[in-house]
Image 1 (cartoon, rainbow, N blue to C red):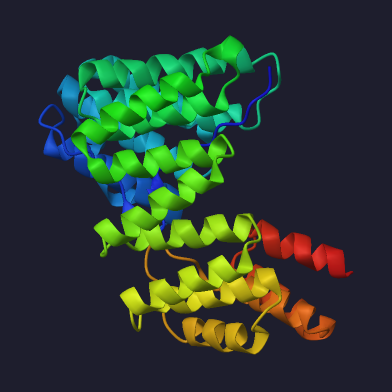
Image 2 (cartoon, rainbow, N blue to C red):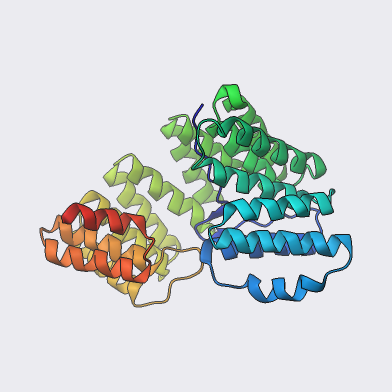
Amino acid sequence: MRFVMRLTLVSLGVTTVAASAVQSPGSQADSVLCDRAINQADGALEELVRQLRASTTPEQQARAAFLRGCERWANGRDGPAAAEFEKAARGDATNPVYRFWLGRVYGEQAAGASPLRLPGLAKRIRDNFERAVAMDPDYLDAREGLVEFYLRAPGIAGGSVQKAKQQAGEVAHRSAYRGARISASIARRTKDTASAVRIYEQLAEQFPDSVVSHVDLIALHVAQRQWPAAWRAVERFEAAFPGRPLARYQVGRVASESGERLEQGQQALQTYLALPPRPNEPTHAAAQWRLGMIREKQGDRQSARAHYETALALDAKFVPARDALARLR
C-alpha cells in the first residue's frame, strides 16, 4: 500500500474556520492560529506558548500541548508535533479540534513514510477524523479531512470514492459553498473534468465574492492545458476583482505555463512584485519563478536563471525554482 496524504486546508485567499456550537471559540481561534503558523511560519505562537507554560488545569495543559504541537510542526518537526497533539487529545478528550489536528499531522507523516508504516498511519488518520466528526457533526474541517482520506487512501486502507461523496453531501447540507467545492475536488480526482468545470463556474456565479472559485477554475484549465478556457477564466477573474493583485499573478501564471501572451504575463508579474503579497496568496518567490519561466520561454536563459536565483534567495525551500535552476545548469 502506498499513498501520500498531506492535508492543507488553507486555500488561496480563504482560511477555514470551523463554525460550530460544540467547539469553543478559543479552540476555533487556536486552530486558525495553528494553520497560519504552519503555512506562514510567522512566529505568532511563540509568545502564547510561553504564557501557557504555567498552565494548571487539565484544559489549560491540553491547550498548551496543542499549541506546542503547532509550534513544532511549523518548525518542520512533525514527530514531536504528533506527540504534543496526542497529549492534547488525551488531556481534553471531548475537544474535536485536537483530534482533527492529530489526524492532520499523521497525514503529514504518511507523505514520507515507509510502506511498513503506512497501514498504521492510515488507521490513525481515519480514526482521528472520524472521532472529530462524531464529537461534532458540524465540524466541516474534519469532514473535509475525511474526504481527503477517502480519496487518497487505497481501498484496503479504507479509501472509498463513495464514502467521499457521502461526506461531501453531509458538508453540503451545512454549507452549500463548501459542499460544492468538495464535490469539485472529487470530480477532479476521479477525472470528471467537465463536472469540475461546471461546479467552479456555478460557484463563481453564485458566490461572486469568492476569489477561490475563480482561482480553482483557472488552475483546472491550466492543469488540463486548456489555454483558451484558462484565459477566459482569467479575464472573468479580472472583471470580478478589478485591481486585485492576485489577478495580476494569474495572468502571469497562465502566460508562464502556456507560452502565450508572454509580455503581458511579464508585466503582470512585475506589477504583482511591486506590492506586498497578501496572506495565503502566492509569494514573491513564486512570482520570480514565474518570471523565470517566461524568460526561459522567450529564449533568455541568463535572465531566467537570475529570476530563479532570486526566488531561492527569497525562499531557499522553494522547490520549483530549485528544480528549474538545476535544469538550466
